[in-house]
Image 1 (cartoon, protein in one colour):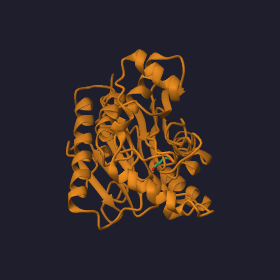
Image 2: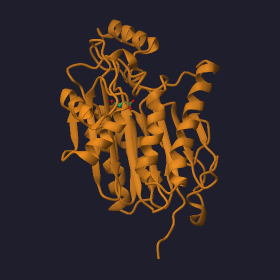
Image 3: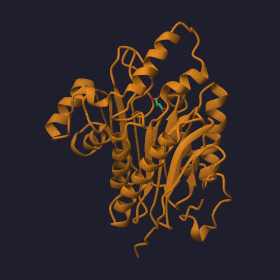
Amino acid sequence: MVHATTPVLIIHGGAGVIKRDMSPAKEKAVRAAMTKALEDGYAQLKAGKPAMDAVTAAITVLEDDPNFNAGRGSVFTHDGKNEMDAAVMDGDTLRAGSVAAVHRVKNPILLARAVMEHSPHVMLIGDGAEEFAKEQGITLVDPSYFRTEERWQQLQKALKEDGEKQPHADLETARHFGTVGAVALDAQGHLAAGTSTGGMTDKRWGRVGDSPIIGAGTYANAQCAVSGTGWGEFYIRTVAAHEICMKVSMLGEPLQRAAAEVINQEIPSMGGNGGAIALDNDGNIAMPFNTDGMYRGWIGADGVPHVAIYDNEPDPSNQPPAAPSSASAPNE
Ligand code: ASP
């Protein structure tokens, strides 16, 4: 007998220092984009489509929105370019695709998916990745498409601060905020994960973060799917997304505990910071972060998009765990 699962979609739009004095217009725009991403992604799940379709539909909305550090609105490198990374992973088949250091791909998440589905490889970078994009009919745009004045000014500020010898946690956090990601559970009970980012403001030398590294910023298997956001070097060193999923799959830890151990203990103990969204195949949700906020959203059995930004806003991670029979019904 095929057991139908109640679909769930979770998204993030980055963890970090979130200014409480964010203008009402900006906060409204962020919440609206997150809501649209949840609606577009969940429509896929409601139509019986695979989790991967929900992940890419949601992330595409956020990549197109200039308020997030992914696609249009990506941060700038030291030499004034937008250089983007993205990855997807399918939990059912353990197939994955990722791209790094692309400059002209309108939606890097769609290219990552094409790498998974239409190439014999897992990860493509730079010019080769864009050559493959062209062959696949993926939309390429002029690099100026990604530029926003806000991100340009962030680079100018970072260039002035470059004299600081030691990376400073607050400074580093401010430099990368706004990465986007999604994890989904479809009606067949399969999970998928995806992450897309411009990386960190002022990054140099072809720096690649955790987002496109399978296991670091993005991972999914049959029991667990994770998308991370934060100071990428620490997510790579802890292999954070894989670590969370292995605690669930191999140690049988509850998802929320597994995610909290990595995000709230391991990463900060090494000097890093950030957050993650995680979902298991029973529809349990975890959204831990060790910063003062994380743009996050979820939609489940009630079909209502929920969005939260600050640490004092309730979400299914800081609510008492749902009863097993309603595990896939997140509530605010
Ligand atoms: N993790 C991303 C990176 O290091 C940035 C972020 O998530 O904010 O590239």
